[in-house]
Length: 293
Image 1 (cartoon, rainbow, N blue to C red):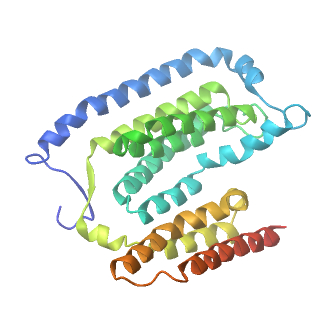
Image 2: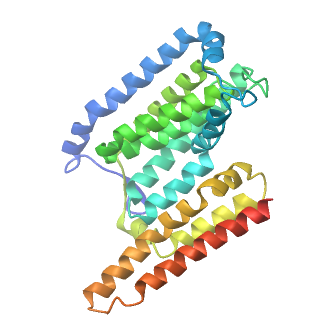
Image 3: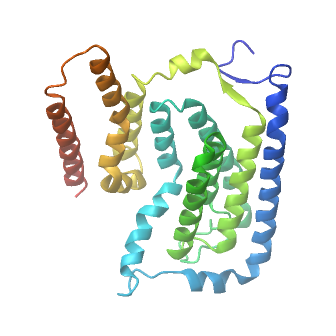
């Protein structure tokens, strides 16, 4: 185990921790089974429920809601969740970020072959990959480990999964049973990963240094924006670009201010520095929008 960057906690000193996690893990397995059962029960009523919840972007009354739902559904995309994982790591939540990304990847490995087995047509007729919902599985698998590590985030996690699931139904991309099955897969994948008690070794924590994580994040974003099919990433940055930039640089600004205060350095001019930094972020965002047009 000494040669592995991600280790599994062994019995002995970690036995008490493992024992305390069992009820939570079994609860997740039970929840996944219950959601899968509900998905089977809902399947015969999918068309009626989908028609009831669906929102059309062509009717004047629902146009505003349609536009609101478009950015919400982006948060179910794996590449967007991976970007959020980078941001979590930059904010020193490396353990939660790694576990969440591993659970998300496992959910993808489960969902992909199932789509080709069932070949269910989407409500909007776009393709035959409706069941199960990969977005619902991905966002659930990503958020469950984070909610487990930070119990205060449970309500946000539940609201996020529900919002993305409803958005996918409302825009005609999935039936309700697709979403329920995807959530079940996400919960199951999280339970599997959490049961391994994955722990980052100090060497890996040093490797995931805050100083170079933004650079890796930048390379990842550039590749997705300008190489291959990066339409989801482009749409995401056209809406949330400044917020992502601020979240990325916020830890460095906070560390700089703490350093100045700790060493008694005069704070004259730091407001100007922050203002220039925010102006640069907004300028880069506007330039990005111009490049997309």
